[in-house]
Length: 341
Ligand SMILES: [Zn+2]
Ligand SMILES: [Zn+2]
Image (cartoon, rainbow, N blue to C red; front, side, top):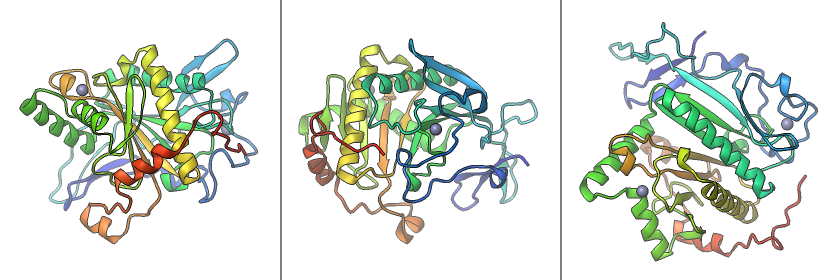
C-alpha cells in the first residue's frame, strides 16, 4: 500500500497517511529510556554491522574509521520520485490527496551506540555538522525542501536508540516553511534587511534573552517561545543555508550547539527534545531574506485541549526567565561531569 498525503477539508493542513508503518519492525523507545542509557543486544548501526544497516549514501571517515554515515531509511513515509506519481493533487469535493514524493535517510552520528552529542569530542560533533552540510548540499538541488532534524527521547518521538538524526527531502515544500518564507520575504521588501539577522543584532545588544554567544553565533530563548526553554541558534553571518558553512563556522557552530545541549542536560536532567535546521534556497529574494537557523524544542509538557482546539500554546516559563536560568548553568570542563551509562 502506498502512502498518501491527505488534506483536511476544515483546516487545509496536510497529513501523511503512512500505510506501511503498522508492519514496520521498529523499536519504540520506552518512556524512561534515553539513547545513552538503553542496553541493546544487537544494533545494525554499530561499528562492524555496516552491511546490515541499509544502503549507504554518505560516509565521512578519519584515519581510523568512519565518523558519520547516512543510509536510506528502509521504511520511509515518502514514495521515491517516479513518472507515475506526478506530484499533482487529486481534488475531490471534500477529500483531496496526493502522493508524498521524496526520500528519507537515517543519519548515524557515531559508530558508538552509547555516545550522545553532549558527550562527544568537539571534532566528532564537527563531523556531524560537516555531514549535515553534505546531505543538504547534495539533496537541495533535486528537491523542493530538505529537512534535517533530531528526535531525542520518548516524548520527542525517538524510535531508534542509536544516536542519529534524520534527513527528509521532499518534492513539495512543507506548509510551515512556505508560510515562513512568505513572511520573511514581506519583511525584506518592507525593510530591505533580513528578519532573523535583525533579530540576532537586537537580541545580542539587549541581552534579555541571550543565553550564549561566540565569535560567529548566538543562542537565545525566542520572544514568543511556544514551549519552555525553546532555543534558537542564529549565525551572525548572513547565509540562506548551511551549504556555505566554512570550517571556522562549523567549529563555532559545534561549540555553541554542544554548550546549549549541555546546559539543557544539566538544568533539566537530560530532557527529551527535538531540534531542526531551517534552510532556505539561495535564489530570488530568499537569497537576501532567508537566514538559516537551528531551533531546539525541549518536550517537557504535553499539549492539552487548549492547544488542540486553538492551535496556540500556553508557555508557563517566560523566555526571559528561561534565559536567566540557562545563563547560570556552567558547562566549563571542570563543571561538566555527567555520568555516561
Ligand atoms: Zn547502536
Ligand atoms: Zn540575514
